[in-house]
Amino acid sequence: MNKIVVGNLTYQLLENGKDGYDDAIFQEKWTEYFEPFDFIFGDWSYGKLRLKGFYKTTHSDVKAYNDIKNYKDYLKNECAYGCRYFLLEKQSN
Picture 1 (cartoon, rainbow, N blue to C red):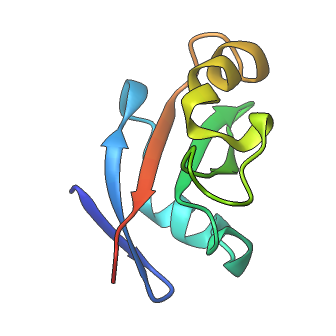
Picture 2 (picture 1 turned 180 degrees about the vertical axis):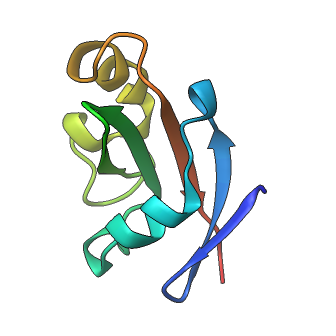
């Protein structure tokens, strides 16, 4: 499963760390809030899925905290050590 459809958007599963992607739970958790983001990062903490949006470095709304080039720092510094996680990239529809 590399393509994920949610709402009217399609995403490509880029990373699936420790088998972190769960389609049913992602579909429940996703909201329209994430539509503008180029990437969605999901990580598991205490059995709950957390989602964070990231932009491409060239996006006009990008800041250091939501620049995709910094997602590994986010994983290291803001997520539970050794957690399950995944990274999705929005595809052109």
